[in-house]
Amino acid sequence: MEKRLKAWGNNRSGQLGDGTWTDFHSSATTVTGLTSAEVVKIAAGGAGPTTGHGLALLTDRTVQSWGANGSGQLGDGTVFGHNTPGQVANLSNATDIAAGGAHSMALLDDQTVVAWGKNNYGQLGNGANTDSSVPVRVEGLNKIIAIAAGLHHSLALREDGTVWAWGYNINGQLGDGTSASRNVPAPVTNLAGVARIAAGANHNLALIGAPGGSGTTVKAWGYNATGQLGDGSTINRFAPVDTALGTGGIHLIAAGCNHSLAVTGADRGLTAWGQNTSRQLGDGTTDYRTKPIPVPGLTGVQLVDGGREHTIVLLGDNTVRSWGSNGSGQLGNGTTDNSSTPVTSLTALTGVDKIAAPVGGDFSLAN
Image 1 (spheres, rainbow, N blue to C red):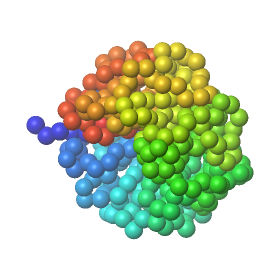
Image 2 (cartoon, one colour):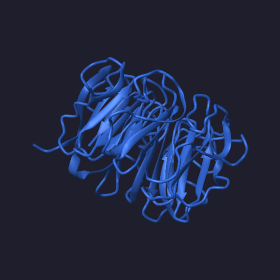
Image 3 (tube, one colour):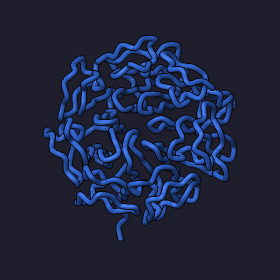
């Protein structure tokens, strides 16, 4: 039997892509029509517990989308949501994808970026503030190697190690030293040598140095009310600051709505910090953490992603664990009970190698 892309959690916007509008699924359901073999990358977006949209980059470099579409975030030229995948318009040369609150992005093979969907804060980066239901070019970007999308802002990493940001900025999430939103990209202040980027709802992380290397550090900026910048404070930062993660051996970074995650050390353990209302830090408490703390008993983490108030990881044995908020079944363990420690997600898949969770939503994807 052919392997299929799987989804679980809230489905009120059709964000699970299984052809239904069922409230939620607490274990994996199949995204209609997409085989695992043709899916190269997946991304999940969402701006609230019941909204969300999914993206899948296929081997032919087209992008499929499904779920909520009130702002055009599915990129199919309409503002009507659909509960099965459909093709993003005018896109046949994508190499990476990202999904924000209600906007989406694609990195193209010429190293430029396009975006579509909600644009009230300029998060599409095209010099305008009107929504677009089809992809538009992000102005002034070239030589881009990675992209990330927050709730209402966007990031791009250039091959020279600089980071560019645009969109909503009231909490300093653009990292340019101001709180003024902007509809075209500008460089993040005093940031160089970046290898990886991650966007939370209103904060960002940057991994400096070769991933896993001895000199790696993580910087953070933006909203910090629950300690998600990891600098020991709850003060918003309008330019990047050092997290208290320390130096060396940092492999991966990820951000949920108001929490942050990093894979560290030779054993590829997980550290977490920030909001913990729904136990999304996995330390068995509901205490906010303004500095990184280890998630107990978790090693061999290959991938990590954060949702609105849940966390999902892929382990070395290709199984998925998750924890935190579970009211919509977004942990995928067949229950709707929150969990303060990792539980096994029932993905109905062997050999998972991709996971995704939305920065502001309550569902998960695996392939």
